[in-house]
Image 1 (tube, protein in one colour):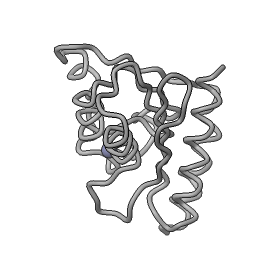
Image 2 (cartoon, protein in one colour; image 1 turned 90 degrees about the horizontal axis):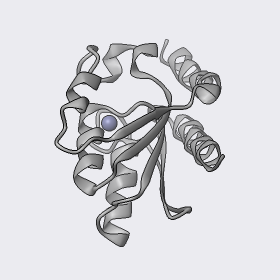
Image 3 (cartoon, protein in one colour; image 1 turned 135 degrees about the vertical axis):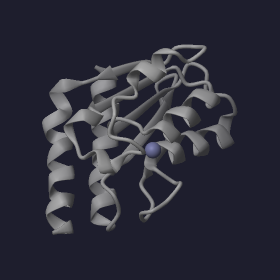
Length: 147
Ligand SMILES: [Zn+2]
């Protein structure tokens, strides 16, 4: 149930990111039940995706993030998954799978999960389906604004 609560917070950040005129991505980084970082995306194009920002901010605060969980509205890209991996995170929870949005939002439209399976140490990815609709409505709103 904690996962739902924190993922909802990440989706709230996606909404905040949209309201601030950025890509609708938001993230929350949690360790031992405590929110260490809560972030929104930076103006596109940028290195500072919400998930990378959450990981970097938390890492700068408390060091290696072993045992922490990254919550993100949209499934992480290759870069953010790499950043999470190197920070020590092995658990990523998201609401919208990459396959449900435009491949333009990623480095590649292909399914990168087989690559993640080959990481030296596995990251556990958890898709929380029940929040997908809520998260998707923020993305759809952003897409409408782009027209
Ligand atoms: Zn990313």
